[in-house]
Image (cartoon, rainbow, N blue to C red):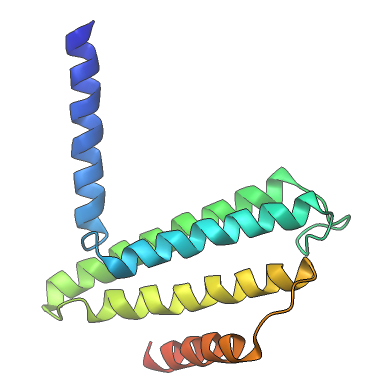
Length: 142
């Protein structure tokens, strides 16, 4: 039984190492993207708990809307993997990956601001303008 547990942990560790490599390495930009994506999911759930979700007709929680959001975030990870593979192929040292992460981080940030507005929280206009500017700049580069 003990050797099965060790084998499972070894397999999990190997999978995690491969995933980290496929994403282009575990650095600050990827950590930021994961954090922002988690905050977006959390704020979306808070909106649904308060009946203010913009994703459903009644404003409440709908598992289909949550699943759609989760699959979109998984697709973002797929695009980061694609960009990392392109960087390795072209030898561009993370340029494509950084552009993809920057674009989706700005979109996730705007979604968090939108969720905060749905919950009735005031938000600094300057931060919103910076996020929109970052998203627009990344769209021009891609």
